[in-house]
Image (tube, rainbow, N blue to C red):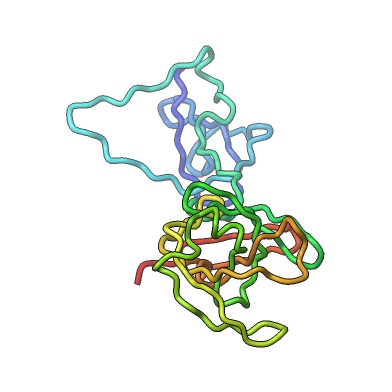
Length: 222
């Protein structure tokens, strides 16, 4: 006897029953009302997300899948599977951070040619690069340099400012990023500057200190 499969479920936990209609055909349903010889299927409590049903195309017949035993439902093959991914959007960039001292440090790529390790500092208005990095990138001592006065723990100092063609952290990238060129005092040797708001302002920023990660989401277009 052929089995007719009918999904009438609403979202939530649903039990499935095998019943017979007035013609004697076997029906699988979660609503046994008005049917006869109904028996609850073992292990049939399921979660049924909302189903989107496409309109049938003209002159095209839908094929009924065939299984070795037509009276059995292939496990998990007729129900849409829910994604097990976390709640992050596909456009989010999640960057693992290294904790050095009391600071979180991210690896960045500058002008698509050099990497550097910068302290993530949402309180710094400018991204800061060491003199050595600026020399490597050829952005120090050029006609494009501007003088910028910045406040430090030791007082106000004048530093050179220039622009990076691109700065990338994970998959998040910003172009024409302003950077101050300055050697930060009293920092570990492997740290080469600060990742400040001249880059971070392009994103919605989440600093997940518990899991040592930086999450950057592009700001919606205005």
